[in-house]
Image (cartoon, rainbow, N blue to C red; front, side, top):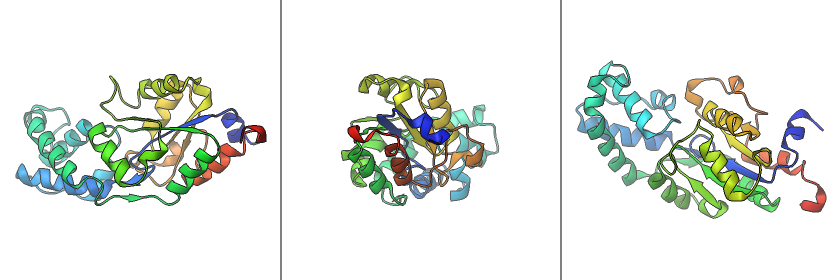
Length: 240
């Protein structure tokens, strides 16, 4: 058995990230942020610039965008002075187009289906606000796969804090070693390591503009379907 398979042996559930793991949502972010910036009389920002800012929650994203466009530090007085108005505009624009410009990554549905067929319990944990997350999952036909869904504002702390992952483990009544986290960024890996969960990463997401090879994970999988196949190979046939 390979090292990755050894780490995954005994896994009975999976916690899966949303942005950059199941869905390419950068186009949605871009449309909403463009509308927000227009209201603030600030110039637009490129999709490529937004991609390196995504993953740490909406508050961090909006502060980073304002800092870039105002040429200021993210929590400087000029940024904070415009933050509340910017956040209100961003949320309004995002809710209006949520999911309309985003797309599923390859083999997401197949991967989730295979995980369910293998008897895995599934949770979605994202730093996206829950008001954005719930309708997006429904629009893309993903909501039926997950027993538990937590957004970035569902709990007191978000990833990379381990609290959301540990909460899912408690919900499922499973020790962290039996719950694998799957994501695209260092946020997911750091949360998993702190929680004591094994972690797999996908190579096609955002990861704050950094290489996925630099993430401290137990392995890189090309898709959720590959992740499902790998996990299923470690489950005794009597449990399949």
